Length: 231
Image (cartoon, rainbow, N blue to C red):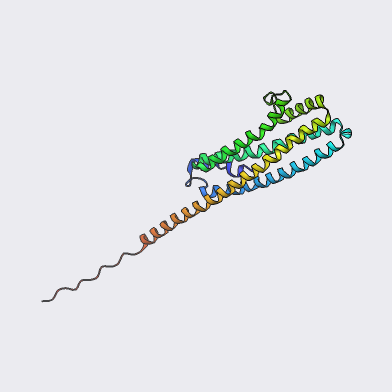
């Protein structure tokens, strides 16, 4: 999806409105791209809610929870964690590339907001690991970190505690997913406003060029023929 705008980034950066796509074209592309990420966030939220229901069902029957069940719950949690961070990272990169191409402070602001969301969203995992005597930085991936966290909690406090840890992290993800959806909605509003302004500017420039060409092509009036004076 990101190739919709990133793929033409070099041409845009090199030529602006005269080489490659115009700024308005890029904003239109970006609007479509952000809309697709908005749909992804909605799917992300739905999956988080489904996961919460699954954890509740497992906790209701802890004696029936086997090791493979807990392992799958951990893997699903890691997959969902990556899903959210990937959306935010992609949005941050798209905004950063657009900001570089067109010197847009609005795009720069949103690039920073999505990057900050990623950092904040990861705080819940880092905090849970610290409480269990672990460091997130010591693991190469979220899945490896979550796996170790659940193993540590389960070994100390049992299966229900392991499920509770996953449930708590999922609850934090649900809250953060709402913030991510709101952030994407804010960008959509900003893009639509900016697009309308840029299209208005382009129309004004086209009108000026059209009027200029009309005046240039208009034939000059023929001087009136002077009659000779009579005495």
